[in-house]
Image (tube, rainbow, N blue to C red):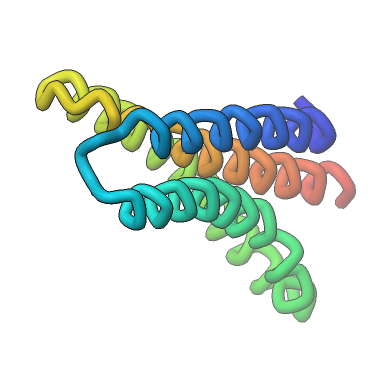
Length: 137
């Protein structure tokens, strides 16, 4: 998958996230309207925030890593480990969201299922940036 493919999926899942958030706002009766509005805002901001956090790490550290060979090699390894952590964290969060919703019969928790996908797409974008850097050397 390329960076443009990741951006396309980010956009599609972002629309799905917005639809699920609006459905949560309409159908959830466990809390007041203000609490649901804040939850909708947190779900949408959380999805985009974690994606841009992971996707922006490469650009944010490029200048620091280019100072010398040590920073380049160790920094690349650390960023690679961080991308792997993002993959594992997203899989773990998806499992936790689904498991908790099923065992506690609180299916409204599944409305926030897109947040781990934001982590997954951001970590994959970071992974592609790292791989492209290694290929260019």
